[in-house]
Image (cartoon, rainbow, N blue to C red):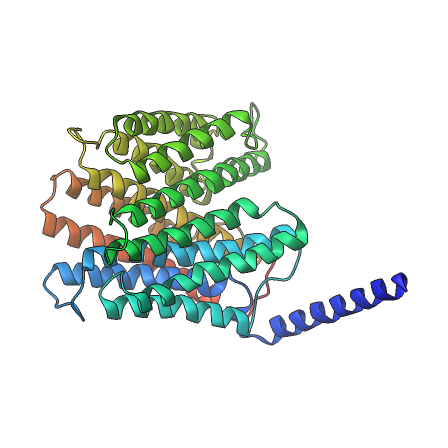
Amino acid sequence: MTERRTAGSQTRGERMLALRRARMAAAPPVLRGGFRPFFLAAGLWAVAAIGLWVAMLSGLPAPVAGDWLAWHRHEMLFGFVGAAIAGYYLTAIPNRSGRLPVAGPPLAALALLWLAGRVALLLSGGPGGAVAMLVDCAFPFVLVLLGAREALVMGNRNLPLVALVLLLGIASVLDHGGATGWIADDALGWRGGLALIVVLIAMIGGRLVPSFTRNWLARRGATGRMPGQPDRYDRAAMAVTAAALAGWAVWPDARATGLALAAAALAQAGRMARWRGMTAARDPLVLSLHLGFAWLPVGLALLAASGPGGPVPRTAALHALTAGAMATMILAVMTRTILSQTARDLRAGPLTVAAYALVTLGALLRMATAFDLLGYQVGIMVSGGVWTAAFGAFLVGYAPILVAPRAAGR
């Protein structure tokens, strides 16, 4: 009896696997892997959301009444970054588990759910309101359910990533709650969301940057000490960083928070110093990862110096972490993942190099605006224009690949 049940269970599993394979083969190319629709959505929304924000600051009437600064913050953290995280999440988890990715109609439904959140926020003029919150926040919790299912099947290797996406969904709910006055600290949600994204960059970047750098150096026969996988120092640096950012999310003006952020900046700079970034500077794909990660200790140090009475404007620290670390790392990971997953050469073409250069220039211009080196209106328009050009170059170079029928590769 036990043997019959085992065989029957295997047969059902094989039938489900065959069904998922058939669904994936029959789907349009853009729905054959999570990175395809969501990296495309991230690029499109980066251009559209910043373009709309700059236009409204330049005098274009908003479509509806609302708090458009809150909309801008929410859409950058939970819309743009949310799409990029979804593309990585839906690609990394199947790669680790060896199971087929979400594809076809379920993936289309998930992408439409993300899009519904963007429409709901745009029509409501920003976060707040029960309907907008339900539509917007359904997306990260569905992602959590998908990831938890894989974690239960294959073990707990994916649980840290699933937990961070869960916390990001909770932060989105809190951002809505703050906008409607449901919680006393109306900035807790977006601060918590930013803190979680920075932790995610430190966690994932701390694995990808040394790994890809080591591979690049090994292919070229480099000698000397090679970058290694995360060790006890890295784990300690992550613990300090996570604690400092959690403290900043809850007590942003506390003196102890500033000291913890300074310690986190030093710890993350120490991690980078061991990765031989300058030796890999000839490869733009590798260099972009180092540049994206380099904004992390810079942003943490600026955030430490932006407390009450500090010499640094807080907006400078925030944009070092967002326009700098977030945007650069997202571009670096998206471009490399697309090339790898579609079995293309890991080589940065002219459009890719242009996107990296433009996103770095955009971050520097936004920092100059924050430090009053550029007039606010001019600085926002110029830095926003450079940002949209960076992601426009990404779309021109990679949208055809994302919608092309070429099969997933490595």
